[in-house]
Image (cartoon, rainbow, N blue to C red; front, side, top):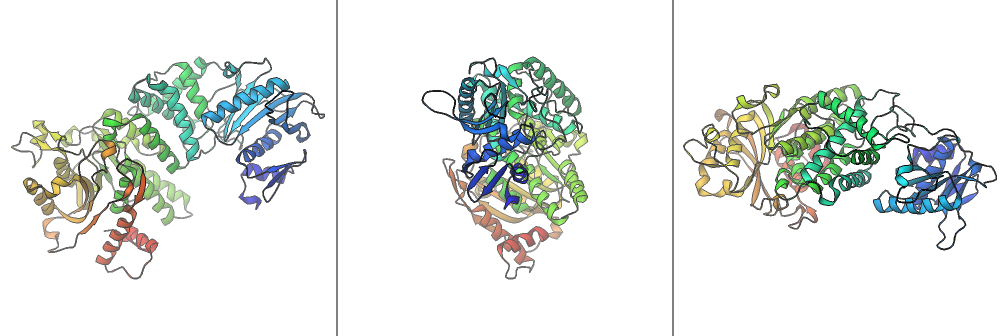
Length: 604
């Protein structure tokens, strides 16, 4: 049973500090028992062990549930570390809370400082979930100026305070830790609150500033040498201007190495920079689970970009469905010519990573090599909006991917106008996945573009998504696969029959999936849409007759108000997988998992 516990708890059990039986935890030196499955008790137990093992305070000098000399309400200190074996003179007061919500952090400070002042301790340690804060309180600060007494960490064995806490390659006490999805959400929300300042700063500018600091932190994590302290942290007695100066130095170095992500300097005040560092310093943005990072970043984006900017973000459920249907492998070159925040590209990377790990199990060197090559050399996107292009790059940076392959440009321009380093050219890509601008308002009027396309010659304007159909098929190799979101008018309007004829003459239609009319309402488009899946063919390769998979999705994971709903898209994907396998004569009494696994192998 011990093996199921947190490593720190395992260490405490092994060293005879605690004992856990059924639902009870006993602190052996104190001979006190509590309910182990109380979430706050779990936090307290880990702090207790850390006080002994990391900070080297004798177990007999620790006590729990210590009531200070006060009137009502009686609020005990969760842990007190004493100077003496008789437990008379307090040195540290510890206040714990189960989780790291801002309200819990504020409460821990108030309760902890109250107890520290009454017990006359030198230090206060607050621990809320995984969030720790150390304060030197011997001078009896008020709650208003408590942050001025912040320290990097507790002194070891009553000795001198350390300058910095976090070190690359350190032990479990000093290395950055992986964060959970809930922790990331909380931290990003705290950062949002600090930077946005309740609406005083423009949301897009706020996001840019936050992204610069996240970019800086990731750079610091990646390029700090083993054994050295990370620079993106707050040292003992460090003033905000010193912290900000150091962080800006890292950022400028990162800018030189990654010039396309951010060109402008950090514009936040020193105090704001220091606060963001304080919030993010203890976690690793590189090592935290990719899915957790992706979900937290997606939620974080939503806090800044609503309304018109939302058009750049395809709902997650539709992104995952389209990538599943298109079935990418590590050998495919993938392009999204209207990539927005990069959802199709990132989920393609996620899916292919899972396949690589499965196909090359236990061969870590090969897994890492193929993974790096795929994410850095085979994923490409084009985005017309420079700020949204930076969001896509930032999302890629968070996922440790090929952000340098995001082109900020109009995907409908002539190929010579693209950056030659990315070699964007016709008939190059195995897969194109995209959600181009939707609705009648999305029209192209620029003559240079109109004359570039079969659908534009001799016209004064044209629906933008019609041009995207032509461009996407042009980008694909023969046998390449396309998944594209389209207005239903393109598929049904009699005046657009020429577009449908063009599609039939250039590609085999594999599937048409009808979506509810509210599918893109939350991101600014109310048109009825469908997803079209095509395979590019030469005319001589066309089958005379062929079946087309068709489905109507009425429930797609969220309803018209944006609230969670059941999701039929995974079932439609499963039926499509069966359809493809039946066409190959491979479908024989397979389970759902077996069907999808075989589809991953054989594809369309």
